[in-house]
Length: 106
Image (tube, rainbow, N blue to C red; front, side):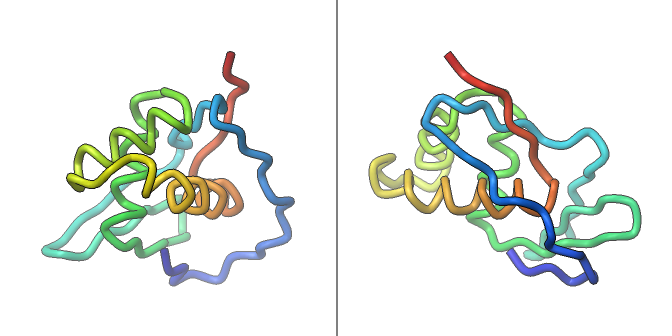
């Protein structure tokens, strides 16, 4: 994911576990034109690669981090075990810039 706006970045890193529930932030909208994808929040714009886009869209399901990795793996036709670490990294990045929030899971 590439930030194309000037964003502070002073936020603390997000603590993630496999049971955390990532959710799309209410004030973020997804835009797509051709092969390009962006998340827009107020005057901030974030360009995403296809993998990070798949992770963000999976957050709309309001399921655990492990389930998000499975949804992304199913979409990309890859084994979920290979995508767990990249999914957690993408979620941490999305959380650091406030594009997703996290709820405690069971």
